[in-house]
Image 1 (cartoon, rainbow, N blue to C red):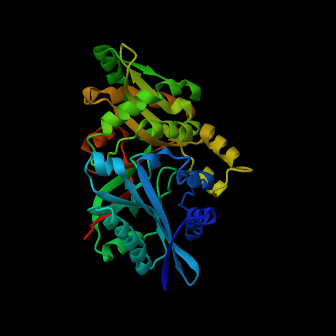
Image 2 (cartoon, helix red, strand yellow):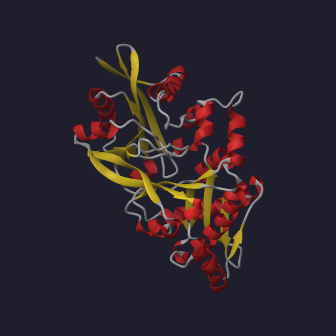
Length: 373
């Protein structure tokens, strides 16, 4: 018998966060989250997303053991302002038992019906800055800090239950030695001169902060055309600043400014924290911080996290300036491998900008959807 219980107590929240640790204990590729940070994500006093969204968390039990988890999410900005009547679900993990998956998803559907929503889609988070999708190819490839990694049967469960693919994503690896840098080097000078642009580099995290509001503006304007986009309000911006700025190596943040010092484009790359997080096994203390700091300075693999260019500057070569700066920094740091996080397969524009990196698809993932009858 499968029993679904909603989480109300702190100890159950910890069990919710820690369930994937047990499920993936034998995986060489799963990257654990930081337990304390995951718990804060669902703290309504800590995370301002709950001013415009709600989440109900559920655990599935069978024979008194936890066998699955799911978060049922409604982003009211999406539902009301964008008139997209979507019931979201995320933080989905389950044993290989399709009946458990059905029981968890049925609970999400129930909440969707109560709120007059039309369909559900997941796994997704609250917004575009959260993790997305289930892996469908590349199970033998290392996960990352910015992605969910799962066992192979997840997609089969959705298909057996009549769910359709909603959106598909690809991830890539790019060997640094194969990147054709001559294009960036040649074009960046021309683009700077033609449009009065300049690159801005950093050596300290605190120097990035004055530009972060502009960065979020550029991010929103450049991603607004995507089918997955949900606006990120000012309070959420402040939250993400506090949560992520510390993880950035400032040398891997590149901005492009116009002649009036207005931000027109940016790129953010993070050192790969995957192996450090595996060593930490979810714990910051006593030694977790040491592993993170070492990776921040010495990792030879980097992950392209975010990139954005104002619509009026798109297709004008601004990314050549950004990539030229990255190439110089990566050469200096001895970077060996570049990893590209999940990007929508129907985002043709973003795919075009990587052509000189010789990307190789190493992982695919997708979200699944179903109408709420």
